[in-house]
Amino acid sequence: MLDDVDRRILRLLQADPARGVPELSEAVGTTPARVSRRLERLREQGVLLGSHAVIDWRALGYTVAVSLRITLDKAVARAFDEFIPAARAVAEVIEIQTFLGRVDVRLSLIAKDLPDYQRIYRDQVLTLPHIADIEALMTVATVKSDESLPI
Image (cartoon, rainbow, N blue to C red; front, top):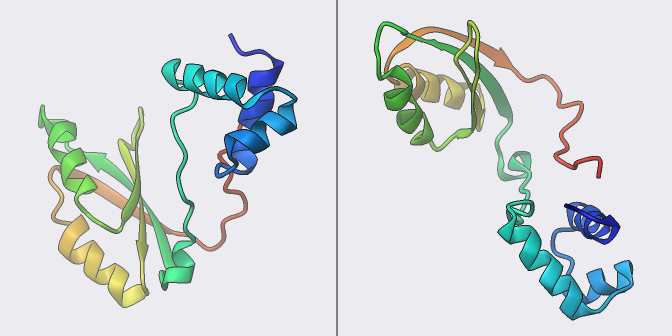
């Protein structure tokens, strides 16, 4: 069970994952040793999964973002099992989600420009196994992108 100190530590890490133990301990009003033990416990409990760098793909020259909604051929028993690893192998696919309902999978894909997207779509996406239907939605604007939890 999380207490108030755990929640404060998690809020601080969400705001700045690079914040060190000394800074965290000062901000929450406890010793670095206690913060270290709390962080270890949060990792062991699976609450704190890690930290990562967030890179703006636009700054690296990717200007096109597309969401592909894919329905798989449900007549094939191993459709998901064969589709997912193949989709993971496409370097430009930055997110894969599976769903219940008419749409089975959503791929988020980035490309340098429209000709690059067309190449990726034609040469890599359309060759993925067991696609029954596919719909492409081009991103116009990202209004909100935040993984911070209200803790």
